[in-house]
Image (cartoon, rainbow, N blue to C red; front, side, top):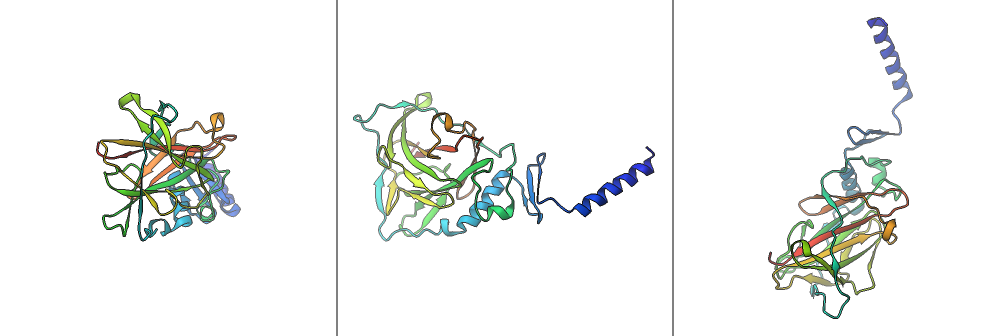
Length: 268
């Protein structure tokens, strides 16, 4: 085909596409960018999560007022009378952006809620640490260490209905072991509602870091059905900001999301 004919054909195709108008939802898998009909772009899966968190919680999550008298609740240790510990095998967490884009969401739709049918589910989590006066919270990502004597709460905002608990982790090196559940009481969990920030511990109590050399705990946030083979085996992806950590997990059909994060408290 002569060059002039090819140029004319290209012009005709472009004109037909323009008349058809933009699609209601288009996705560029090579760039990982989702664009809605109005042209608002979700540049990455974490960008989508950030938009959802901003629309869902606004600034309320960082403006939680401490109670008049914050009650310390020491993080307990596994006792000899509890069930024997088992080897701790951490679930994989990757620091970085997921390779696949967030499919089926637009900037506009995320302001209304996170669809449970989306290919990713996630959460935002942060430490709310009381300052020395007990009058103000300082927000930190979960990657930030906790110092002896600090009083703190965990704030978790999941995209899905979830249950949360805290377990003791002890040992050294490759010999870490998962001990007893330390919050809430063994055999129970804290129910979390999709899109609603939740504070752990519940109520006026605060966790307080005791004077020990090193303490490790694992925060577990999972769908109630994420047990055994029903739990998604995909790794969790994490991004740490100045005041919070964000998590995403690819959730194939017939499976349910689950996250775990190791927390370090005390003096290393």
